[in-house]
Image 1: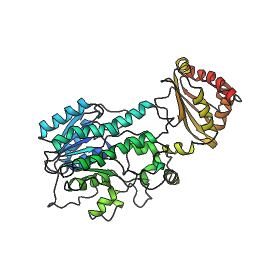
Image 2: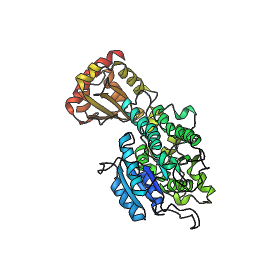
Image 3: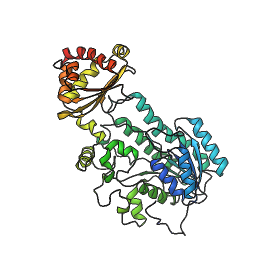
Image 4: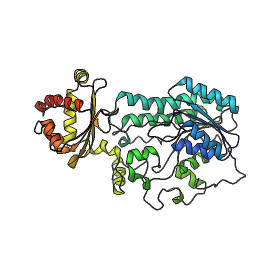
Length: 419
């Protein structure tokens, strides 16, 4: 249930308005959809998930059922925002069914918090394709219909354009893609001034979503606010006139202007310290420390902590010997779960393109997962500890394809002379 219904009956409601939301099958997109549905709005659910996902809850059809149950009308459309034809079809169906489009919410987004050497181009293309190009394209195709609306809005779920290099150094590709969404606000707000309100919305704190669970692990929840705060902030923006445009809105700030004084109702765990969101003024290192203090394990920390040390040095050497030949003869993706002094997750991809290696999760599912102490890992590559001996003595645990695990021996042999 929503925390508040703080808008009195004499203020604009969204009944009869048509809202086109990308990525609305779950998370923030769905929360905004449900908030509008309670007013009796028409909601176009433009998202990819038509069949149940093994790890992520919700499809466009389950979201549609929830929207109808909340009092709205729903139109579920299978849309990958990288596909112009699919967006065009969804826009056409929306106009045919509801007579137009009044509000567009660009919520669909992809994230990969890795450095330049660790980010495969496939992931770069995905982030730029969904976040930047998808937002631009969906806006372009909706604008002709928005121009016919009484009070049209475009709302992008993207951050203020904070050009402090700390928000680029650990995940340049993600920041470029996310800021691409914000640059659409900057440009289109000016381009359509007086006709369409174009704004960005970003949470002040971490929000409890599946993604946040993946980034921070099980201890992260209590440092988050609920999805409803973002939905309530979006609702506050939609009722503004078109002169309210080009704004980079922070959820808490607009709700304070709406008269909300008590934000504890939005907290997953009231009175618990909250984790500030990315791209605001707090440094990533401080965020990581804050997460750890309260029992979470930040996945993005590897970008910082893994940047120096013997394991990082070893991976620089590994990257130096990667070649299409090694990839061709190996055809395996390895993940290393290291404990001890230099704990972290690392990977070597000897299956795709010219190969890649680095900190964090592998770009594709690992064929082999090796778990061992970081000091033993280094000894294996230095030739001081045979993988077979490590395995037999219990120092090394292997899950997955044992044949591929044996192939790594050959690569270690090539690296040892270089160390």
